[in-house]
Amino acid sequence: MGLFSKDIQTMDDLYLHMLEDIYYAEQQIEKALPKMIEKASSSALKAAFESHLQETKGHLERLEEVFALLNKDVKGATCPAIDGIIKETNEISKEISDEKVLDAALAAAAQAVEYYEMTRYGTLIAWSKEMGRTDCAQILQQTLEEEQAADQKLTRIAEERLNKAA
Ligand SMILES: [Fe+2]
Image (cartoon, rainbow, N blue to C red; front, side, top):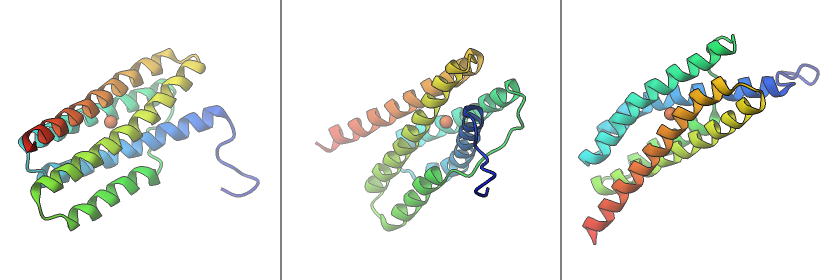
């Protein structure tokens, strides 16, 4: 990608790049969740991560559907943002020995991931509509709603933990 050959010229290019970015992010989340399930102690947190792992597989399939609708190859583009959140989580986890503190750190990391995904899906939905691709928007909307629900579930788990501690 040099000065005279920039890869992203049009809104369509930018849209495709963002689709490839979130595809990569979902793949990294799919890889990270089993490790988070292993590290988590609370059964509620483990269950939340397990159900989100299943949902994440569906998110990848939905993105594959969107690539197909646009006649594009299914492809991921390295996303330093998600890599950073996962790396930070791994580093912090290594520093924590108390299992309750570790659970709180893992839940917080998962919520950071959810927010990253929500902002990406939100933008892609808006741009899909702008491009007249309500078919793509509808598919992405289903995933956005699952990300929101996953985030809310993690908030409830954190609240229950605080109530027990009080
Ligand atoms: Fe997702």
